[in-house]
Length: 509
Figure 1 (cartoon, rainbow, N blue to C red):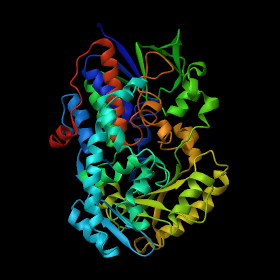
Figure 2 (cartoon, rainbow, N blue to C red):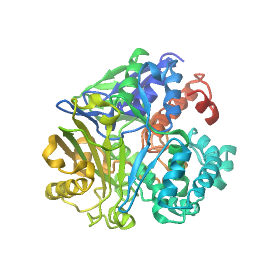
Figure 3 (cartoon, one colour):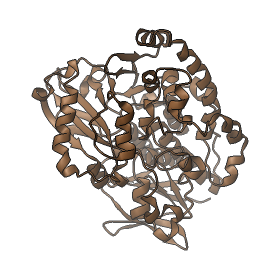
Figure 4 (cartoon, rainbow, N blue to C red):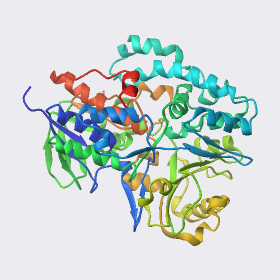
């Protein structure tokens, strides 16, 4: 084949996953990254001696990360220290709280304590959703480059289990009569920036995955994952150009031929892999006449995820909270309707708090805490003026935090602080509409109907990241890198092992 040159735009998770695999398989790889370090939305936020993850905070489906490292002949344990969290998280409602465990009997006891008799629903839930996930998982490993991919045996076997006419909430209430308990098994729709009352039922698999395989903290933060994969890529001979923002993808006769950087440099390549936020790439990096239904004038009307209001707080005291905590509004459904339908800041407020220093004390000085707060809010299709609303909303969030016994008097202990609003996501991190979870995972924007791994608008162009198949989330973004790497290898006749089955992946992790 000769040495083919692949240019990867962006050193986020999908980009470094794809680059490390391609470099290992003999391609010449150049990664161009606008920031001064790899990571994208997974870079660290460093405030003095306090360290936080910018975006995602934990790892599901660890076996996929293990497999990405094995693709390059390596072991994840040689690069990362991963800790399985116990309990997984605390769910805090107005009248009660639940701590879900890796031990199903402990989880059932927690359910029984708040909803006597409902614990049997957990066994039915796990048994039924296990069967569904067995059919769905192979669909996450395949590219959907043409409509014929919807006729493959893998997809046709899975199709009856997709429950296309149902939502996640409708699905989980088959197992749990009380809607509050349904929320405890459906809030994971927020990982996609969606409401469980509208998110397709197939994504019930998110809560099942947590209970079946656990969730993990990476010591030092999730930011260590892209940093380690970038290291692997370099070890395999890839070149990483930091502080090198891309102006646009260069094209000739409808095919990508490389990129031009903002400083005027050009990089010629046989293939271009885009790890930029898809909405940003379509608006700013790609030729609009080639984009079809993803043209900027059409793109804004597509369904997008919510955004997030972020607070990173360095406290001069320890906090008596588990690693992960989710606090629900009294009227959770109304709270979500404000975010997704009305696109306003309403009276209700839900939020997530990570107290990672209970697991990873090196994230803060001794006796201190690094507290990460995420509040789902509308994306920038709203008319919210964040310059004006930022300070009063900060006060509301702090008031709500201080309702927790463990965080009373919080304000007095803040030594370091940073806030990221939806405007910051859009302007500083090139996140289209500030929609931090990318294109919404509606049925019309899944698998074949999502922007494709081999991008349909431009030859020699591939997509990785949350805006393409299989979608948002660390494991699926890593998987997008592997899928695109395999597509490039298919084009040039480079051999590789077929993806392992779910059983093989789990047993080898």
